[in-house]
Every structure is written in C-alpha cells, then in structure tokens.
Amino acid sequence: MGLMAREETRTTQPTTVRTSATDPAVDVASDAQGDAQAAAMRAPRAWVVRLVVVAIVLSALNLRPAITSLGALLEEVRDGLGMSGGVAGLLTSMPPLCFALFGGMAPRLARRFGPSAVVCAGMLAITAGLLIRPYAGSTAGFLAASALALMGIAVSNVLMPVIVKRWFPDRVGSMTGLYSMAVALGTAAAAAVSVPMTDALGGNWQSGLALWAVLAAVAVVPWVPLLRDRGAAPDARGAASTAAKAPASSAGRTPAREEAAAPVRITRSRTAWALAVFFGLQATAAYITMGWMAQIFRDAGVPASTAGLLLAVTMVMGVPLAFVIPRLASRLPHQGPIVVALGVCGLAGYAGLYAAPAAGAWAWALLLGIANCAFPLALTMVGMRARTGVGVAQLSAFAQSTGYLISIPGPILVGVLYQSSGGWGLPIALMTGLMIPQMVVGVLAGRNRTVEDEAAR
Image 1 (spheres, rainbow, N blue to C red):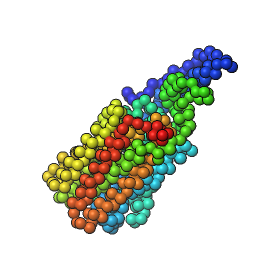
Image 2 (cartoon, one colour):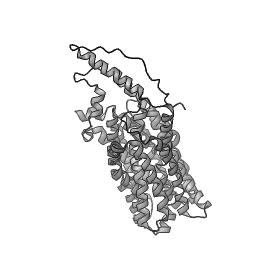
Image 3 (spheres, helix red, strand yellow):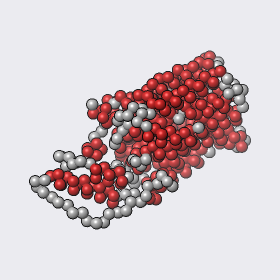
Image 4 (tube, one colour):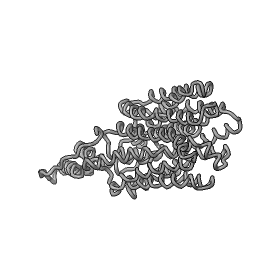
C-alpha cells in the first residue's frame, strides 16, 4: 500500500550534549535534538499506521448511507409513516441540523477521550441508529433514531480531518482524497442498491434500511486497538522534523510547541468564515440532492429503480474525483479555479434538470455529481488553511458546525416549495440561486493564507 508510512528505525546511539552557563543556545539546541530523538522513539509501528488507514476508510464508507439510503426510499417511508411534505423536508434537513449541533462537541470530546475513542463511539451510534429507526413504529421514533445515527456521523465528520492531519501531516491531500473517495463510494452504494435490496427483501423498506447497520458495525472493529491513542502527535517523522528544524527560542521552547499550546481565535479569521459559508452552501446543495433528486426524477416519469440509479451516478462521480481534486488542490496556491469549475457544472446541471429532467437525466446526474465534489475540496482546504493540529481541529469544528447550521433551511424550504407549488420549478430556481454565492465564498476561502496568521492580526 503506497500510502502507508514505513516503520521508523529507533535510534540507540548516545548523543553528546554540551552545556554552558554562558551559552543558553546550546541548551536549547540540545533540547530540540532530544525532542527529535524522543519523537523518533515514539514512531508508530507499520501495522498501526495501516490499521489507521483501514479504520479511516471503513468509517468514511459509513458517513452517508444513513442519508442516501433514505433518499432512495423516501416515498416508501413517507407512505409507511404517513409523513407530509413538510415533515419529509424536516427529515431531509436533519443531517445538517445534527451535524451543526453535535459536530461542535467533537474537539472537546477528543481532548478528553482521544479522537480514536470518539470516532469508535460514533460508529457504534450509527450502528444503533440505523438498526432502530426502521422499526421505531412512528414518525417521532424514526426521527429520534435518525438523530442518534447522525450524531455519530457528526463527530466523525469533524474528527476525520484531525486524524488525517495527525497521522499523515505530509500527505494531507492524498489521504483526504482517499477518505473522500470512500465517503463518495458509500454514498453511491447506498443510493444504488437500497431500492433493489428492498425489492429482493419482498418490498420491505424497513429491512432495506436496517441492513446498512451491518456496514457500520464492521467499521467499529479497527478502532478498538486504537482506543488508547490520546497523544497529540503520533506521526514521529513530523514531530522530529519540526523539533530538529525549529530555531532556538529565548524561552527554551520551539515555535512548534508554542503554536501547539496556543488555541486559535478562529472567529477573527476571515478565511474561517469564508470556508464555513462555503461549507454550508455546498452542504445545502448536497443534502437537497441526496434527499430530493430521486423524487424529482420519479415525478418526471422515471421509474423508481432508475431514479435511485441516477442518484447513485451523481454520488459515484465523487469516487474518482474525490481522490483527484484534493491532490490537485493541495498542489495549487489558490483553490478558486476549482471552486468556479465545480460551480459552473452545478449551474448547468440545474438548468437541465429544470428544462428536461427525464430526457437528459443521465447528463444532469453527471454534472451535479461533479458539482457535489465541492465537499472533498472543502475538507482539503480545512487541512490547508491551518498550520497546527490545534488549528485544524478548531477550523474543522467551526467550518462544519457553522456550515451545517447554514444548510439547515435549504432542504426544508425545498419540501415546502414543492408541496405549495405542486412542481419543481421554484425548488430548482432556489438551488440555482444558491450556487452563485457558493462560488464567491469558495474563491475567498481558497486564498493562500492560514487562520493562525489571520487570528494573530
């Protein structure tokens, strides 16, 4: 596996250290060298790094099936539970609502219990929620169980960029691409096979939804050996490099230590706000697509199984692009051109969905799938717009929590507009209008700067 880090060789040779009461720089340099040696001694074994990669991929596969499996079977769920259009709109707005409410808790929980333990608990919550909600027997119970699963997704959403930054600080782009590709694959798989799987189970939508709990249960397993990981920087190479290269400080501390110890006043950063709004608007488009696009095609005369497949095509576009876009973005000083290109694809997809939803269904599904790759781009920018692990954790929590708060009204408003107007003209006009500010704030968030520098000013 090319992405795996090789096991570091432990250093056993003694180091000669000179001390001088008149030359404090010697002491500081010795401290830095000692830090580098200590970091090398703490280098994780190769199998641990491989296990982290497996855990990240399996967890990423479970971050969207709870949503897209419901989108593919929304009509059956509405009929089975007697939901109105407004309540269905609330249901499709639950993901961003829960992500906003529970995502902000993730950094605090991670500091207390460790990121691995929190993500492991998140996978358990997803398993329980997906298993309980189809058999809750009422709309209120269905919503409550969905909230449990979404809570697990929320904390995992926030901590995934943190885990990537900690374990793979020199490969943020490629690892974010791998993680985003797994998210897209899980999203597409749930959209594609939920309807056929339900048909194979005799048309029982409860069983069709509950089966996704098995995938979440599998994702718990690789995190169990990592539960004791509570350290601040398990990647010894990054720590050793920082300690060895850091200049001496008159206080006897390296700059890396000072940055790691200082929290970032994230709300003072314009880039953080731009990234939060960009995240919110792309999430609005994504959850409207996941919750309603299959229904748009079905109302245009497309069979239910084909509509689910079209949604799967939209989601599966993120599999290759979610790997390519973060790698490309990490090589560019400014990610604005990528933001604009994705936005143009979204505008074209919405225009086609309005003019000829059935005739050009496959083309519109492809274009909207490309536009939805703003999500891995946003995750990549989270890792690029902060220098330290503390900064990434704060920026990830702030951008995702604030962004998901922004995205809450979108799916609800689409449901209300659809029910009140009896068609999809107004909802599609809303989706199109939101794409313009998404492109603007995305360009601002893509500028080459860090939140630490902006907050300091």
